[in-house]
Structures are given as C-alpha cells and as structure tokens.
Image (cartoon, rainbow, N blue to C red; front, side, top):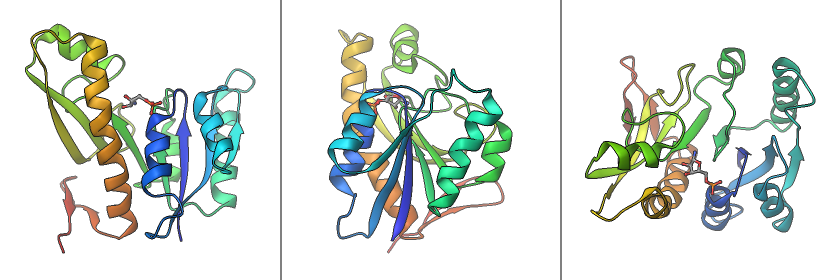
Length: 201
Ligand code: GRF
C-alpha cells in the first residue's frame, strides 16, 4: 500500500479528488491521514470518508512544536508521500529536509509565473492569455520546487479571478491524482539538474 498524508487548510476539493480517484482503489493507494491547521471543510470530507484526521491548531503552538506534531503523526504511519492540497502555511526548512522529495504541492498557476497567494488574480491582472496549474515537489523556496506536471487553461477575455479559478480547479483535480499515481508507481525521478522525468511505459 502506498500511503499518503494530506495537509489542507480549506475547502478540500483537491482532497476530494484524491479520495474519489485513488483512495482505496485498485492502485493500492490510501490516504492514511488528513491534517489541517484549522477547522476546515477538508476535515469534514475526511470524516465522511472514514479517513483519520487531525486538527492541529497552529495558533496554539509555536512553529517548531506545531510541525513536530505533524512529523510524529506522519512518521507513526510510515507515510510515503505528503500532499499539500490547499495547505496555506509555509513549511520550515527543517520540516522539508526531514521529508526531502516526499512532499508535493498543487499551485493554481503555470509556475514559475505567479507564485504565492492569489495566483489566479495575479494572472488576470497581468493579462496573460494562458494560465493553469502546477504540481511540484516542495523545497525551501515558496512554489519553486521541481515541476512534475502542469495543465494549461485559456484565460478568456471576460474572465475574472473567480471564473478563471473555477476552470483551473477542474484541471487541478485531474493532475494532482495523476501525479500521485505516477509517484506511487515509481515513475517519477528528479535529475541532478532538478528536472523531473516521468518514465513512460
Ligand atoms: C487550490 O486552488 C490549490 O491550487 C491552492 O489552493 C486551492 C485549494 O483548493 N493551493 P481546495 O481546498 O483543494 O478546494
């Protein structure tokens, strides 16, 4: 069994896509635990699907203590991959080093364009004609780790932040589970030049 921990802070639609497409399916992938720093909808989705979940209140601990609680939960369950699915906190270098190349994130732009918050708003404001989403490995720099997969979305003349975000989200729900499955199948490699290669059948 390939074991996932999903970290989320909000609505949890990406979590839901992993539940629907992968969790306990024929690929032998299971979400062992969902962790949230707030009382998110993601936690409700976990509960509804009988997935163990934790609310670790980030206001109740300092960063080190907060992260050490997550590390304990992840290690106890011998997790293979940590998936950041709408997780709104920045992980420390210590945490990232602890799970080097075992953390992935989904970001709603074609990185390296528009990292950080409000990526869809940034894209509309800039006036790009194509945006999209990116799944990447997490390193110490925000939204700057090796890119695994991207999907493009056309920005229409009458798009606003919301309408663009909605269409990008549909693509997110495809590529995030796809990448997880590829990693579980041992088909994803990072080269010395930090490019990601995906082994083809
Ligand atoms: C997504 O757009 C994701 O790319 C970004 O935060 C949003 C989370 O959405 N990092 P959800 O909570 O998965 O519905």
